[in-house]
Length: 83
Image (tube, rainbow, N blue to C red; front, top):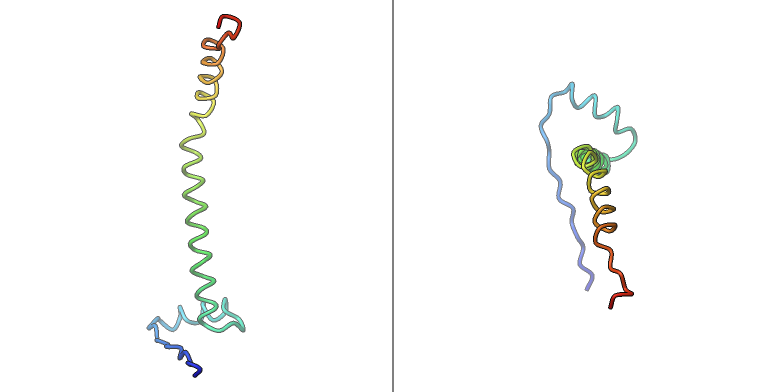
């Protein structure tokens, strides 16, 4: 027996001006595809912004960490001839 999946739809009340703007962006796509793509793009922009903010906050410390790492390796290198 084949089970048919019925799609359920809903309406979203928006001002006519907003709908006109969205219709221009939507083009020939159906509303579900368009809104899914819009939501994915918004999420991508948010992730990119968060990554950039994190990078800006961490970047100043990377040189410090790199120098500390070099100093540690220089000062605490193991001399295998002594063992």
